[in-house]
Image (spheres, rainbow, N blue to C red):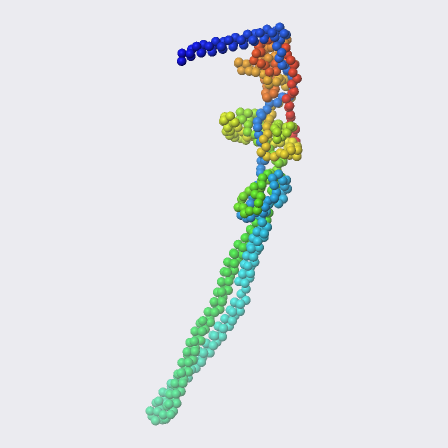
Length: 474
């Protein structure tokens, strides 16, 4: 613990020595530079040319719409042989439900319709009932006449009985007066008994025939009711027929839907089912997309996206694009942002920007290389431009203590700290609005040991101009 103060004093002494050595080195170097004609520095001339301001960000290709080929209903799907990357035409067969299953479903539905048609014809055929009704009506009429005859016969038998009764009474009276013999009286008695017996027989037969008439009279009504009931049965069968026809229509529709066609001319993006198996309705089998609709989606910082407007030109680059960048333009900017965590764990507010390729550029990419959706790219959105701007390299510009932009200008082989007014900025160049003239030399990349009014020996560098690409609207 007692060594603490001495260690601090030693450290401070070492720090002072190092600082003194550095200062001496700078002075010696400056003197040597003066002796040798100035410190060599890389310099570039202020020049005019096109310059563009841009926002650069990573993005990825995407398809605005992916078409899914799904199971129309629960069924067994045949093996799907078409694979990812296969070009397809609109209406081309991509998959199908087992043909035999579809045919059997249609046949079963047709059989149900035909069976009900036969039942309706059978129900509507009332030939037998009409014949029976005619027979019943004839029978009623015949029974009616039979009853009338039996009633007449019974009335005759009653009259005969009454006559036999009167004759018997007269014979009985005459017998008492010895006018008639016993034999005649007995004959009158016998005749009365026969008449009574005949009357009773005729009366019983009449009652039987009347009962039969009452029963027979119900037969036509029963048959008429049966015919009327057939009308009700016809209505029921008609309803069943309608249901069967609906099922037949559904079966025929399902048979057509069971052949799954490509919704667009495009390419198979993904095959999710390959083997024959039973699959539930709604299951995705394939996805199809149009590579001609490819676009780029980029998540741009909200503070940068405010400078972007629709139709701004865009340069699209990256390994997936190749050596020659592709051109496009801003199609739309989402109206709301979202929070995204950067790779460093920083929360950033970003906004989605959609970029459309120029048509000819996209065709070049699709035909010339393996290119599709979800490919990583880099976009550079140009937000401002000047075709004839006075400019210097971005590395030549630095901030002053007051926040002004400055450069080291070289005038008469001497460094001058020059404050400038800037315009368009990008990662490579800066537009100079005030402070410099065309042809003046500035230090390309100022080092920390440069000082104002220092003598320097400029080494002129030819810089390759940053590649400015202007979109051509296809």
